[in-house]
Image (cartoon, rainbow, N blue to C red; front, side):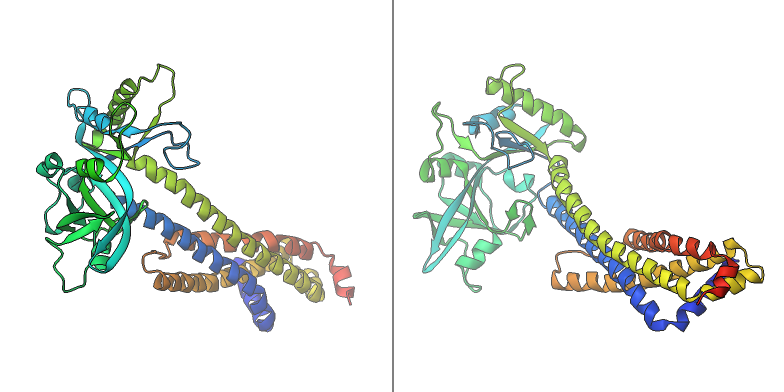
Length: 413
């Protein structure tokens, strides 16, 4: 019976090609929207995950202040800060045995000048362990050394973006003297390209010894005479020990900051997984929002199918009456019109899948960094939606057709 209903549905649709095409158009647009918008949402998620891989591995981030999820760390606690002395306390293997490396970072904006060229960039004053903790590599020259820290040396290591702004392609930057906030610094190293992360362009940076920045460039002393830092990175010695490491860091800092037993922390400790989850919540909401927009388009297409099927039932009332008069049962008529509605939806959905794939491909060509490739899950979801729309919106016209009395149907004008 299903095969015969399918044959009759295709014959009925081919008899009204233009009307069938216009009816399928709504489903086609809806499915194309589902495919394209879901690929965008998933592409954004993949892009953010790839960026987090560039942060480094097995890292724990310690921020000043509390992170509530509604803003960046550092808000909500008055006078909350981290210090170089906090970082040094975390370097104690007796108290934090699961720390492989502890890296204090002081982040500031800096004005740069070389010859007649100027630039603005992000300054990161740090220690030699930063290179390995963040998985940076050198293109040429060297990185900050322990002796640079001791001597408060005026040396800098440049990222690729800064290098391109200050130096011509044929110039050798190593050994050159640039001015940083008006003070002369010697270029000792060039970082290999790193790319972007959720925290910005990792090539638009220059790095120098923390002690140099604290002594010569910025006022970082607290009222207690300690040296402020913007962030502390702690690299876990073992990936399996991250949870234990977070506990150890929390215990040490709570003790150093004299926080009472039930008092709130004035710092935030987050793992890479925690940061990724926070960003994933945003991308999931984005994907859900885009899916809802596409769902509205599918709803409009389904209403179009129901309207056309109701018109079809009215036009073919005599045919329905004749079929019932020669022995067709109610289930046969119901199946015929229901299959017709599903065929309309599935054909429209197939065209929509093709159009959605084309839209996703076009977006990827326009934004190469965004992987908007269409997944099998999106195709199956769109196909399932098409069938569901056909069944849902075709059910009422089919029930109405199957419920017609054969005598009244044959008399219908």
